[in-house]
Picture 1: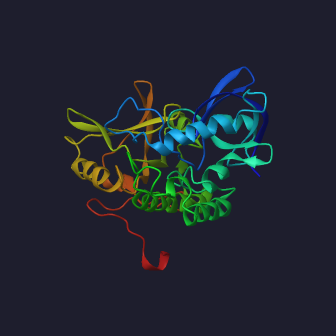
Picture 2: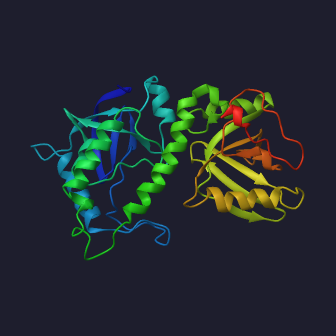
Length: 321
């Protein structure tokens, strides 16, 4: 069981996978973990957004009904986080790219995340990692929903409008999830810091002037090309980190940019291990990437990582595999 915050009042149902709640004196948006219902409202950036679908409109209506009690009022729920850290830690660390809380939602004996998957309103969404608590339940629920062609798995539900290609998406999500699973399995032995869950360690590294390894998501790719270099943003609004790649003054710079664009960004592997010294630049923590050895698919696995000779990459030996 993960850490729970009980008897939280729902104040708004945004759509099928997002609600707003009252926690103490704070209003918080909650993004349901491991689910991804289709869209019910247009995104401000339609060129990159998921399309509004009939299934998305129906899931938003379903969610409104789900969180409304017999008196027509929004109900109370329990929030459960995917780790058993203290509540104050969970409320700080378990947040997504838009600063929303990311967690499970229980209404009485019903786990809403599981309900969404079982009834076919959502696939088992593993893009940001598999569920630590309910992986087997979610996997079986998705299997049953597909077998019975419920919701999004019914080819007729979106036949008159936009739809999503789940056969492609699920394979990509699973690929990313396998990378996260390996990082979680290694734990502290990976030698790297999770920018999302261990952000204070990133800030501590600024004070200590030491190099660190960071496990981060580079899906956004090169965000900005500036004179003499390129900028990459990772983390989130609450946990920002940027990489500066000086392409003009570093011979490895163009290769670093090429690797991020072709290997990690978009529908690539996304997650990478990045090494460097963290400094504060214009109010945002930054690491300068000058060498190809600062970027890796694999974790260092040991505190002291030996840099390769110039022009080479330190690949693991067969005996290490």
